[in-house]
Image 1 (spheres, helix red, strand yellow):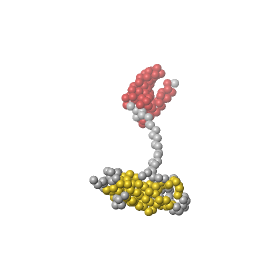
Image 2 (tube, rainbow, N blue to C red; image 1 turned 120 degrees about the horizontal axis):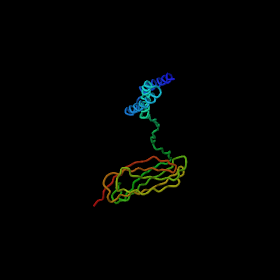
Image 3 (tube, rainbow, N blue to C red; image 1 turned 45 degrees about the vertical axis):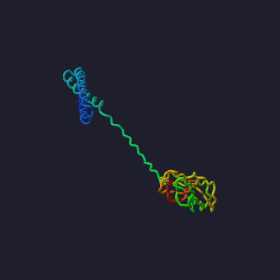
Image 4 (cartoon, rainbow, N blue to C red; image 1 turned 30 degrees about the horizontal axis):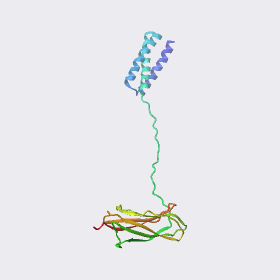
Length: 215
C-alpha cells in the first residue's frame, strides 16, 4: 500500500516540478511562502503515513504543491484585449443641385455717380435674374454679400422671389450703404441665387472702391 502511495506521490512531484519550472511567473515571495507552508503540512501528513521516510517525502510533495499554489495565486492574469475597428468619416465637398438661373446685367448706382461707396452714402446694386432652365424655379433668394471683410458696409436683407417661370426674368435691386466710419479701400462683393430645392446659381464677384468721410 505504501509503495502505491509513494508511486502516486512521486508522479505528483515530477509533474508539479515540471509545471513550476516552466511556468513560474508569480511573486517570488508568495511562491516561497507557499513552498514553506506546503512543506510543513506535507511533512505532517507523510509522517503519519510512513514514518521518517514518509515524513521526508511528504515534505517534498508539500513544498512542490505549496509553491504551485503560491505561484497560481500571484501570477498576473492575461487581460483579453479587444481591438475595435473604426472608420474615419471624412466630410465630403458640399453638393449643390444645378440651377437654371443666371444673374446678368449687374449695375452699381451711387448717389454722386463717382462709382465709389462713400461714407454715409446709400448705393444700389441692380441685376437681372433669368430662368434659362427647363423648369420653373420656386422660392428664389438673391444673395449679395461682401467677402473681403470690409467693415462699416451694410447690405439690405434679401427679398425672396416666390416663382419664376421658364424663360422669364426679373429685375432685383439691393441697397448698399456706407457707414460714417467707412475707410478708404476696396470692397469685394459676390452675387448669386439659391432655390428651395437647394440649387445654387453661378456666382459673380466684383470689387468697388470705398472712400472715407470728407470733413
